[in-house]
Amino acid sequence: MDEIRLKALAKINLGLDVTGCRDDGYHLVRMIMQTIHLFDSVQMEKTAEPGIQLSTNIRFLPVDEHNIAYKAARLLIEEFELTQGIHIDIKKCIPVSAGMAGGSTDAAAVLYGMNLLYDLRLSQKQLAKRALTLGADVPYCLMRGTALAEGIGEKLTRLPAVPRCPVVIAKPGISVSTKWVYDRLSLNEQTRHPDIDQLITDIRQQDLHAIASHMGNILEEVTVKEYPVIAQIKESLMNYGALNAMMSGSGPTVFALFEERSTAKDAADALRASGLARHIYVTTVFNV
Ligand code: ATP
Image (cartoon, rainbow, N blue to C red; front, top):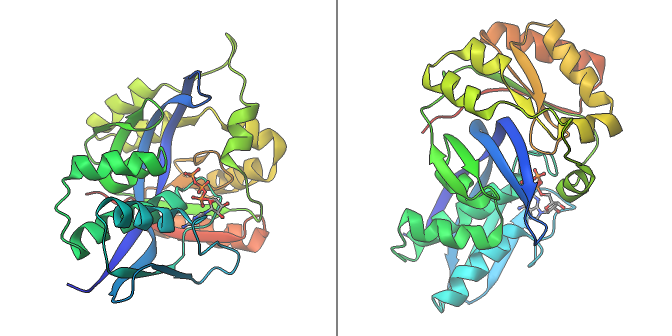
């Protein structure tokens, strides 16, 4: 095999709680992760000459060692002393700096693809170990589906797949740095934490309405305070029939769960007409 094309899936967080902070500054989280049918296309091709060539359709993205997909390739090339090189082409569809793990999922795709292309025979567990050195979300991006992520995001427990449902994704024309949001989060006795255990129960019971009603993201209070457009987008999606709408990760992307695809499409159309969001997609949850 000399070439491989993979779908690097975006994620949303049905629940996101922060329970503390480690001495090294990393936050301790409890998150319900869910992949969706929104993806970057990652094409990888072996090259005779050594080295990494990276190309992407997004002008402002780095194509050197500052791109996390490049780092993933370099990690395996160095560890396994690969003499051939690789060309990686990333067609990005996942909004950048959006709270959808766009970079992490590209890195996971490169690890997965190079393992096959170079016949490295790394197990899922061995890949996950290497993934974690690239970023806290990368192991989950390898796993995909519905999962509880704990620790700094790397302790993963597979959950039953959530009921298949339409999802609207809406990103306003602003970008938010994950670090900026976490740095501004202050936890005290008054902090209202989402009930992650209840969400897990709802998922086990396959109750979409209950899942929607218990969604919660502790980071909303930081990001929404700074960017009220997020609250406006949520309100619009709710007015047009969403079961619930919430910010994903550190934002600013909002996602909304729906029961019917036609309602989801109408809500997306209404949001387009409002001009509140720059990128709007109607998609579904992706289960493994
Ligand atoms: P998360 O949900 O994990 O917080 P995010 O969606 O907020 O991620 P990304 O889009 O993954 O953010 O990454 C944003 C930053 O990472 C940008 O500064 C971007 O330049 C850099 N970056 C490096 N490599 C990539 C990549 N392959 N795709 C997207 N961004 C990348």
